Each structure stands twice: as C-alpha cells, then as structure tokens.
Length: 416
Image (cartoon, rainbow, N blue to C red):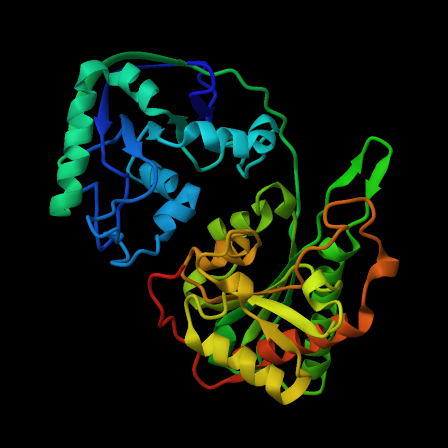
C-alpha cells in the first residue's frame, strides 16, 4: 500500500483482525447532523470519510454555511466520538492523502506523545488509520460502491443509513513505547465570596520547551518563558489583593502546564481530569509567547494578537476590550482569530483544550519571529516593557472575570 495509508496504534495488540467493517459516513455525531443514529459500533471497525458533508451549494450540513465546523478542523473529535461509541478501529478515507502526507512528512515521521495512565497507557484515542480511496476499496472490495452511494444519499437527505460490509482484514502494528512523566504546576487562590468562590477562573501558560538537541540548547525565552513569567506576575498581584482583603471574589486556579510542545498534553490531561468541576470553570485565560515583536509591528511593539475571545462568549471579548481601553491601550489584533486563518493558532495552544469542553477561553500571543523554535530564542531579545503591559491586560481581564456579579455566558455557537 506504500504511502497510501497512515496508521496510529493506540493499544498493545500487534495484530487485529476484522471480518466486517461498518461504513458510517463522516463519523459525525452533532445536533445538526449525525451518522450514529441507530448505529451500533461497539467493538467494531468503522469506515468514515474525512471532513464533513457539503450540500450542492457548497454549504456544510453542520454549520449551514461555507465555513467548516470543528468536525473538519479538529482531527481528534471524530476519534474521541468513535471511542465513546465503543468503536475498536477507525478507518478514515482521505481523498487528499498523498498531498497531506507530503505536507506533513516531518510530523508523520516523528515520534508521538500522548497522555495516559498506568491502567490505560495508550491514552484516550482508538486505533485509527487514514487511507486513500484505493486502500478503502481494497478493504471492502467491490462493495465500495455501496460506500459512495450511502454517502451521497446521506448528503441529499441529511440522514445516513449505516452499511455493514464484509471483509477479510488483518492490521499489523509495531511500535516502541517509552513511558515518561510530566507535571503540571498548580496554584490556588480561594475566592473571597462565600457563594462565588465555588466558581473558578483558570489562568494558564506552558512552561515546557524543546530542551537540548545535540549540542544546541533551545532556551525558549519567548516560547514560553515570557508567558510563564507573566502568569507568575499576575498570580503575585492577585495574592497581594487577597492579602489586602480586596478580592478576588471567585477562585483562581493558576496552572503552568507541561507537554504543550508535544501536543498540548498537560492542558489536555487537566481538561480530562479536572481538579475543579468543568461546570464551575468560568473561563480560561492563556498566555503563550508575549515577549517579542513580529515583523508586522516592528514600529509599534505595544500590540498583542487576541485569539478565541469571541468564539464561545461575546462577554469575554467585551471584557478584554474594556480592560484594554481602560488600562493598557495596546493594539489588539484579531488577525489570527479568523475562522479561516491558515496558521490555525486557535487550535495550537493550551486554551483550546478548555474551549473544546465549552469553556470560554482567550489566548494572548505576540506572533512568530525569526527565533521561533530556535536556540536563538534568548532572554536579551525580550521586550520587557511590552511584556509588562500585556501582563497588566491579563490581570485586569482575569480580575473582571473573577469579580463581576454574574459569570460570563456561553452565547456563541458554531465557531469553536
């Protein structure tokens, strides 16, 4: 099969055999459209298409617009859904697999890291394999015509009828596993209000970087020494306020997470194993790279890219805007918050693991520069005055989230 498939083994079975596979459309389970209605996939292999169904006008059946939903943008979402439904193996048909392999060759050839525990060391995703249409035809033979027909009917009607197809398939996996231990560092400031203290605002930054490679040390002053330092300063100010009996009313969880550079692992672990109920988590304020100036703003260092603030809650966006106008007067740039941003930064920092759980999140980011992920990301290049102003904005936004009478509402749908 050559480079026409990419597999991810998530358990320790070296050989997995199947005599049938269930075609399940796009593997989506959404209020607007579901491929799982009346489908029993427990213990079975499923075959799904990458992406999401689009009607004849080029609009998504999920969003009702040309903009795609997170069923297309978040590669984990379908796999987590399949896992929750009990599927044993997920085959994903990717018509553009050749191009995607070439575009992501470096990532695909690198080692994988994921969260897990002693009872489930392989993590939370099922076994999966991205395959070309040619490989899919090999799996189900001439019955592949039923797959295409079922998919096309589902697009027209908005409902899928699952198709069970016989096969004679053996999947062989070989992998080497090294178990590593990473730590999130948590600090807790209990709220002063007897009722509101049960609600929590989570402030995050990742403290890991790339370490040493050969003789080169990757210092990570901006990524993310700047964010880590900023969060510690904000924490210090919040503690000082509490010492003076001045708040905050809600509780604050300050969390420095590990494993961001390997796939947002520390924040993912917390989101799956929270110390405080996610239902009581008001918002996440995330700080990742705030100490440098990119080319766009070389003549105006007092700026910050704001990402995610209006994706789930317009109130969070308004709070940050008001805090900036009242206290810091930075240039707030929303370029990377665009749904069609090709860099996809919204999905690339720790706030996303909270947003994925329906928790409003805001991400502060200075953009990339020539030293990004290089040994030359060193402390003498940090713009400390800019960093201090951003720290003030982070503080005042967090302060308002923690002290307003009513917690912010999740009032936006379809942009997460």
